[in-house]
Amino acid sequence: PNGTQIRRARISFKLGLGKNWVGEGDVDFAEGDASIKDMWIGYQGFKHSLIQVGQFKQPFGFDTLSSSNAIWFTERSYADAWTPDRHLGVGYQTWGERWQTKLSFFGQAIDDTNDHLAADDTSLYKDHGWGYAGRFSFAPVMVSETKAVHLGAAYAYRTPNAGPDADLNILDLSCRPEAGKISKAKFLNAKVTNVKNWTMVGAEFVGVWGPFSWQSEYQQMKVNRMDGFGTTAAAIAATSQGHTFSNAYGQVSWIFGGQRTYDPSEGVFGKVAASSRGALELVARYSTMNQDDLTAIDPVKGGKAKNLSVGVTYYLNKNVRWMLDYVKVDNNENAKPNKRYNYGKTGYVNDDFAFTTLRLQVNF
Image 1 (cartoon, rainbow, N blue to C red):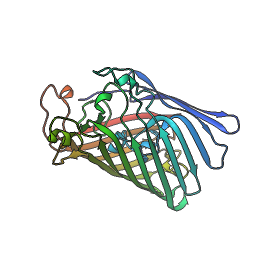
Image 2: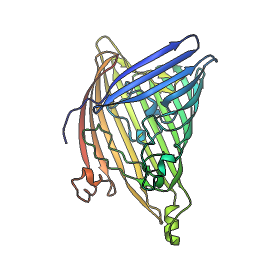
Image 3: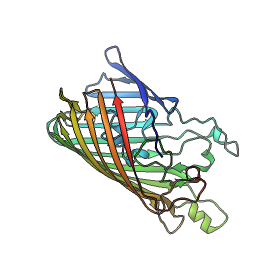
Image 4: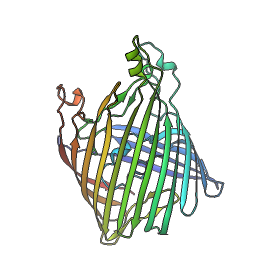
């Protein structure tokens, strides 16, 4: 499909509450709805430290933690599809000249409500899902903010949310290609029931060296299930079978007339600073996500996709940029949208396609 949309409009504020207290709030408007993104208060009275309470991004995933004003393509990579992202919780972050680390304990997100009853009228009383996450990053090479090499590692643990499917303890990993929501079809559709918890590990290799920069990640998820149920040994074995999924990407950039910078205290890139005549950036990315786990018992056929993306961005100044991306998607035979977005058919098998996105982005 073809179409146009306002991807997002966001109003943000940051607060200084006395000498040692700070806060932040973001309200997002997308697809005709409003939602709260960041909403937290923090204490920074200890040297090189921040304690946060409220809703904020959990420390997992370089691409997810990067601001939408600093990402290289119109949409983040597949890796962003299953990171913890924003949840209510408490976190502690500390940093030095070349490193940073952050730990957090969190519950459900603000919009993960628990006001729906399951078929047996019990999910209203189910405990909210919870988890914890930690990330450490270090710059073994730190000549300056424009010449640096970053290494990072992260770990996360999570239990299923309370909600309308709480009695089934479902983990739904479905996601779209690395595009906007003009097409809502999700081609990767792994869904696991009877889930007890899941864990995630991530590794990051990132850097900037003058006009050239690169960014890469590998993530793996392991889904652990509760004791199996059923009336036969086969059914019990199937409902207790664990599963493993993974994703990875690598992207490179070359900038003419501007500069990307790296902040070791946050472990992410900042926005591109353009010259008085603007800046031009050429980008390329290869990414893959594997939601197939073809175990002998209870195989999951969520699909596997490989994307090749190229793009060009023109920065008029530090606040305005035009982005043009082209993405080629290579799906395997298990990657297909559900019937809702497939015109009631059983699915297009091994449907490969390409799409082009043009975006005007303004921030101030």
